[in-house]
Length: 624
Image: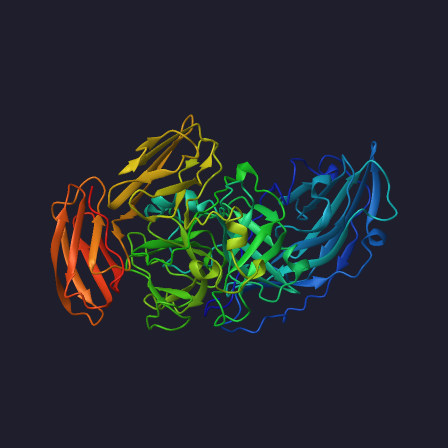
């Protein structure tokens, strides 16, 4: 959602073979044979005034759709060519800039092929085959106001094995060209400029979306996102206001464009090849209304993303930590993929509010001028991911005032940390259920391209705060084709381990200790170190006591230990040393007034405060 309106894509006539709309290579039979019959034409009245109300609560409109009520089986023409049957029909929407089609009830047989192409045969979509069978399919656009459907089969049908229920129309821009390609503001920075050098993996997960809601279409942006199984499940994160009132039928007809970008830092003359996937389903989202939640939406794509699309499942960070710098990658005005940079820390706040609120649902960002321009966001950028300095998603774009006219106005991103589980209590209102199916408790997850050599180190401990001579149980949460584990337990027994799931580790010396895990595959390695992760507290007994307290520090009393004692009112009181050994110290609090006291212990490795009660009851055992 941005405060910009008007829209969409200059489709240059090129041959487009899509894969997962899903298509296979091939050409219509009519291209290599001269058919005798002319193609019948169905004219659809163009309702050119079908526009969405422009407001700050809807994304950028791309166009609209018109219903096709004609029975195409009766309108089209059949012709036999050798042993094949060819069925064709042409659909015309007068004065349209570009058209696409919405199919349903597809039930093709093996060897049957369905094509969509322009009258001059320069733009070809397909062949669609039985791998496209299903309830719905949306095609890419063909430039112009006419589009031809051709069906090639080994049999003659009375009723076609597919239906075409809508035709989509792109709106025109001020230059009477289709909105999208070439429409972004002049300040924008292409993702393959120097600013994008460190973000080449992340960009592969970001796609342009043709959103369908009833008979309106919109441009938005979103990203593939990783889950803790790291299994390539095609989860997709965008903003809820993108198709806020879409239903399951609409989601099944959304179109996702991958690798829609310039090869370099310049706007190309011709539109790049369109690699798209059709169809999705809704998994979870924030409440409707941008002020009620963090404006996120999680989808599941209908198909797995083909490897030739170079998919990257972006990582995430749900800690809520403030990012000092980073980028967003997006499709402003439905144009090619761009990158915008921030160099000042994000501000935690609420939507359209510039006052800091640590508990806010949004991140506020100001964009910075860089070498190649002053990238901002525009209509069509809605739903785009914002990345922190570690390359992980921390939010999705709702909107704001930034534009190429107002470079210094702020934008607002729904917090990933809030979307995790704060919008509601069940799976339909949060990300955690879907993105952490193992319930591992992971707070940060790196992205992946599913390279089998990738490995990810991860672990947790329970408990991580213990008393001397107690143990910590470590849980391995690493991922990938791991062949070797190397654990390092500072201050622990054992101090190292090669096990996948190490035994309990005992700690016998008070202090704070690091834990490190290195995991390896045949060609990959990853490590994780948690500093001061295990906190080992001195053993203080008895409690309650008669005023004498025994402090056991493990192997040795720290040389730099400082002991201070305060009564319940906060007044420091005195004590005397009663007994000392190498690792044990008995002190007596003076005077022995009954009540609650606080013992504060400080050294290089210890900084803890303990509560004790004096009630005149127990004495400590002697130091050994």
